Amino acid sequence: MKFVLLRNFFIKAISSVFFIGYLPYAPGTFGSLAAVGLVCLLKTSNSPTYFLFTLAVVVLGLFTCGRMENLLGKKDPGCIVIDEVAGMFIALSFMPINLKILFLAFLIFRILDTLKPFPAGRLQHLHGSLGVMIDDLIAGIYTNIVLLVILKLAVL
Image (cartoon, rainbow, N blue to C red; front, side, top):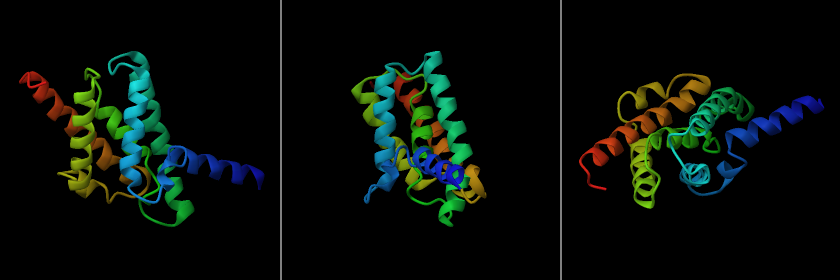
């Protein structure tokens, strides 16, 4: 019994990014902001540590999101925000870290996460962890591409 309670606590803590997802308003936005803060702590977006951390967040999300859905009996509950963190980490991969890039990445990611451009909208209906994570991973990839184009055009 104690093991189950402890396991459920860790699933809730990880999938909600240490309970940020339980904030009453805009938990996905706060999860994305938490990712920006973590990126700032890592200081770079192209180091091996950054990529290992990104991989760890994706793997933890894939491990916990479906279990969190089962615990709450709800498809993609709003308290799950590890998917936003993973998406933001992907969005900021290979990017110089400065305030303009962080702001643009956050803004573009939130817009794309809300709009769910193809194929994100269709794939989010998959069952379990993949369904929770995939739309944010796609939004992160699209955000990264948009930022790379902006940087290539030397706008920033």
